[in-house]
Image (cartoon, rainbow, N blue to C red; front, side, top):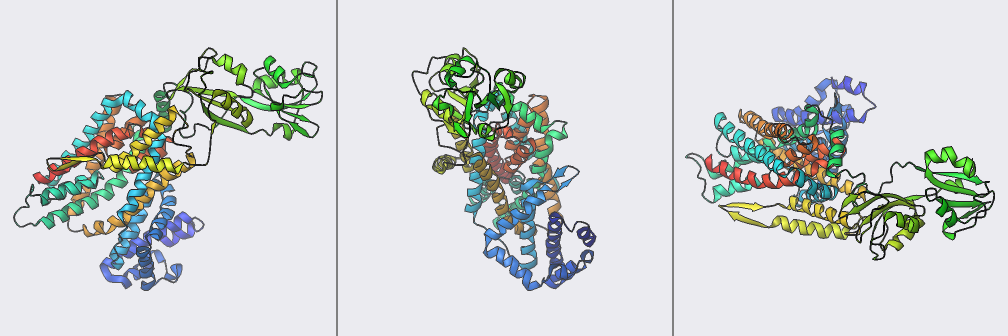
Amino acid sequence: MLKKYLKKHHANPLAIIGALLATLFLAGSAFAASGTEGALAEIKHFGGVTLEMFEPVTAEGLHALFQLLDKQPIVFLLLALSIGYPLGKLSLKGVSLGATAGTLVVGLAISITASVAFGINYSIPGIVSSLFLLMFMYALGLKVGPQFFAGLKSGGMAFIVLALIVWSLNWLIVFFGVKLAGLAPGYAAGIISGSYTVTAVIGVATSAIQSGAYTPPSGMTAEQVSANIAAGYAISYVISTIGIILLIKYLPQMFGHDPVADAKQAEIDMSGGATELVPGSAGSLTIGFSPLEIRAYKLQHDDFIGKTIEQLFDLHPNAPILRVVRGKDVIEPSDNPTLQKDDIIAVRSDVHELILKGTEVIGEEVDEPLALNIELEAADIRVGADGISGKTLEELAKEIGFGLQLKGIFRQGVQIPSLAKTVIQFGDVVRVVGPDWCVQKAAIALGGRALLDTSVTEVMWMAIAMVIGYLVGLLSFTAGGIPFALGTSAGCLLAGIFVSYFRSKNPEFSGPVSEGARSFIQDIGLNMFIAVLAANVGPKVINSFHGDTVIWVAIIGFIGALLPVVVAYIVGLKVFKLNPVICDGACTGARNSTPGLNAINDQSKSSIAASPYPVTYALTTVLVLIGGYIAQILS
């Protein structure tokens, strides 16, 4: 079977990746039955594949490979990413794992095979996964800052109700499911921890044992109960992580909604009808489509000859001349030259008007690269000059509007109408598009600094904000033996949200942040975290495979992880009339699934689903710890 598959897809690297993964799983399962040589024999036999295909493959060679991954964990992480990303792109009838689930599957495959076939248990320091997760959360916060506060105003109570539904149903399903299945003490808390993907539940459940709040039944030791907690966690964690990613990713479509269209509508609703992204947000300085276009004309009409650039701007303010070419010389409009016959001038104006009247009013249209090669910039400028405050847009257009297109005006991070009589106030942010010299001239007049789209990221501000968020997340208090804390990941998420929110009011705050860099930090942060997780939990999954216990744990964990989310989603849609993507984001936060959030962001081509995420995430983070503690005491 495999031989035919590779022959059919020999040019497709994804097919080879699939074959390698199958081989890894085969090696592990065959070793469990008949040792190393048996594993190699099974690989040889499978589908007619011979060892020549993987030459030279020996027991020593494979052992050396897995030992290398153990001694050099960076190689393990990069290998999981390099295979997981293309694996996540494979689609079966429109359904794909995505990069995060793909990385998890690959990491588990390698980790499990190393443990079963060669007795190598990977252990990557937790600080690695913690750092990457915190970077992901901060980058995500930068993306959704202003939308977070708008989301609170529009659906705060609904989000709280959805969080309570997800948490309470998960607890009821897991606790009573364990009772009905007759599983030993410890499994309830472990499955709650795994199905909710909140590792801290293991800590509070274990503390209940160590403090004496829970006493093991006769015939069982505290160590056995702790082992059951770990086993329940490991099995349900893997199943629920993959399951929740796929569920969250396709939940809107399961109910007949278009996630991309719904996300766009949610962005419009949360912006109050604004047509421009707030200052400092991702993509805010992308020029995008404009009805204005630059065209070049050879000056032939007497109405233009002998006049200066400024005189013509007064006569035709909607058609500024951005460049003059005289012979082979380029003359910039900033010099305010007097136009001569046969000069070639570049005009930026409404395309329709230029097509209809350009030749008639100015002269023959020409294709002159020297005139047309004008680079335009988009910039945000904060008004800092007292002399500007109180003037209308109409007045400013005449004074400093040469060569500029006004894209939007923002007051306290909210876009306001750009009308002729709109009065500009101190602290407003004006977004303009035009040649760099026009932008810089306007910035000087407005008393601000032109903030342009940049590939530079101010790392100092990012580090400071993450430190503050991390320390806030550490703050906790204990009640009844249960620690209450926001959590460091949620702390860094909120740090990113606040930085983004303040930048929307003053784009000069916290320095430039490249969207390319922000997006990379978000992507690599999450998937590196997942790769570390896969390396560390793989052996625990294998150790839990005995009897029918694993089947019950898998079933209970699967139902407890997914069913509450579906119920909450239906309530959000039918009762609270939430936007489908916003509702999905709220349910994702209620399930504490950061990979799930990334999945719906990818599917909807937007990060708007993250706006309700911190609200439900913070609430259920506390509730699930309480629930895990109670479940252990009642076991």
